[in-house]
Image (cartoon, rainbow, N blue to C red):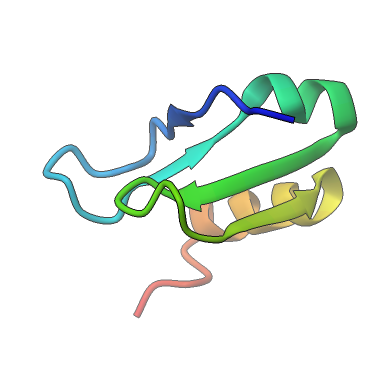
Length: 66
């Protein structure tokens, strides 16, 4: 399956720390594929919705701040 990838709205605008995801695939399968936008032919990680939601909540709460 070919995905239509979009850059995350949470990615930084200066070209670093950019991820892309495939929202149509996510809606159809309830799994979220993500990849590094600087390496579009590199590996893709796929998360189920519960894991992804827990990760996003942790990011918003600062759980991963250095």
